[in-house]
Length: 118
Image 1 (cartoon, rainbow, N blue to C red):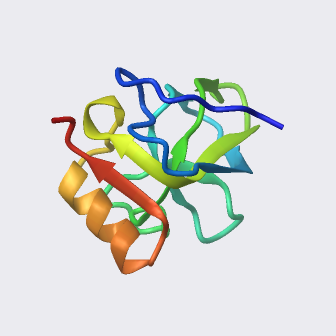
Image 2 (image 1 turned 90 degrees about the vertical axis):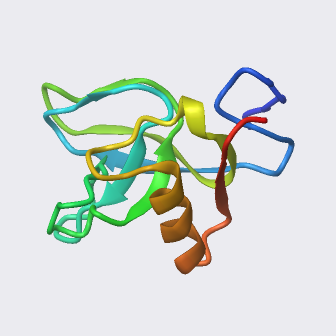
């Protein structure tokens, strides 16, 4: 079982409980921890969420928990599905911002919040 601690300069913004799940990152990507992910409807793999995508991944659903190099093929990895995260540590795909991502999580009643560090 993983143990998380509060890091005021890091991705996890508060001691709100975090939850991770195992996901498959689609091939052709090399993403860093904090990448905003969306799920591709066909196949169920995850990818960097781009607002203009038309494959289901345009809706943010998770945040990548660690750096992942999937440039050579799909990679099984961990993603956050609950927690409060720092805006300045999130890697947003084209067309997304803290406001649009936070709104998508709220609309889905997902227990993820993105906050601007005070």
